[in-house]
Picture 1 (cartoon, rainbow, N blue to C red):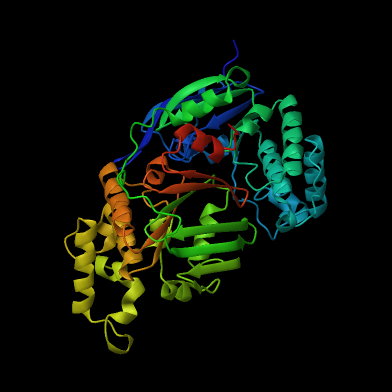
Picture 2: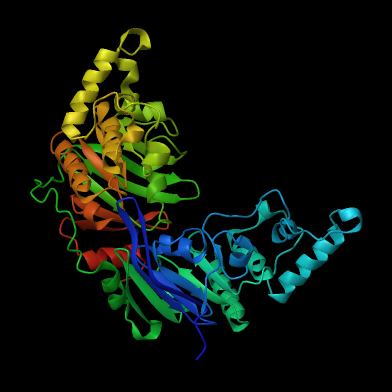
Amino acid sequence: MTAPVVEAIGVAKRFGPTVALADGNLSVSAGETHALVGRNGAGKSTLVAVLTGLLRPDAGEVRFAGRPAPPLADRAAWRSLVACVYQKPSVVADLSVAENLFLNRQPRGRFGLLSRPALRRQATELLESWAIPVNPELPAGQLTVEQRQLVEIAGALSLGARFVILDEPTAQLEGAAIARLFDRLRDLREQGVTFVFISHHLPEIYQICQRVTVFRDARHVLTAPVGELREEELVAAMVGEARGLVRVGADRPAVGSDADPVLELTGVGVPGFVEHVDLTVRRGEIVGVAGSAASGKRQLAEALAGLRPRTGEVRLAGRRVPAANVPAALRAGIGYLPGDRNVDGFVPGLSVAENATMTIAGNLGPAGTVLPGRRDAVARRLIADLEVHTAGPHQPVSELSGGNSQKVVMARALASDPRVLVLVAPTAGVDVRSKESLLGAVDRETRAQRGALLVSDELADLCVCDRVVVMAGGRVIAEHPRGWDEADLVAEIEGIGR
């Protein structure tokens, strides 16, 4: 019996107290396109990092064609076995396709100089051998997303790899481009290339894949032939019983349709991401926005905070908010919590007090100065309100746990007493107690005068919402009142009509 192209057996990986992968099992047969699916946080990305030699597992093993994986330091050996084509391009935009294909291994001529004729010839032969219709002399920055992915696949194949992981390859493609990509993948599979196909758009699994593996809560749940698994069974495997959902705000009072609107979006678009969104958030209401990574939900939130250009009209308490203007968004009354606290959420070298009061620094003393006593008093109130476990306002925020540093980012959003909170993945990467505390703060802060737009596809986050809208392709495609069905919501997020 032929050994699988790749096997992950009992792979586990922790990052401090966080279990990223507890039971990672995957077996991919030669010449198949094997789907790997699961909701955010299911462990897919961690498994991919282990399969490509970017992470060393804490337990378990990876085998290629029955043989143990090479040492992590032997990058050439890994590149000859496996490649991953990510959503974000890894090509060098200013170099040609040929130069990208043979980066760091360009053919040399006399005196060791780069031989451009040989480079063009080898690139042309490589692309033609795999029937990839791309001009090797074209600058990589001019490639379409579809072409860029095919060039990256060709580069991997030229290194000897016949196993390629495709991470959300259709997220930025239109229907015709997806069909062409799938035709090319079928051709490559017939030539002996094996794929792992990761997608949040589940109907694609049934178009291109032969088998599917589902991960949930950092564990392998099932592997089955695609033809033997109904869509409802696939969604159920991804959702499970959802017994761990945090039910904060179950007693929230209903918000009537006659309540005053605090945030109104009319025909709002974000170039390249959001096409046309009409949405209203009323006083005392939390509106959830769910959708896949390619839905445009995060870009919509960033545009509301002034971080991205937008079209259309945004009104806060009836007043228009200028586009692409962060100070104007703050003055209008938007409190913003970004999706990645480590990148956009706080300044590690500053204290808890400095981070928490950053948005109101101009109000903490005369003529734009900051009076430390006034700053610390505001910080202590926020620390108490949000139950931040810290040695005091002067402790560097970088010394706090993930949950407590996220509370500091929430404190910053609340410091300006905003009319509307715009929250992106507010409980990402925090423990259960911190999750309950953060969602409890959102619930508490929106029961009176404030509203909130909570952008997430984590079911626990969405449970606190009074209603949830689902985005796909830059548009709102569905709306659900409180009490929505978990499987129905996930099916819409993942692109399955139920």
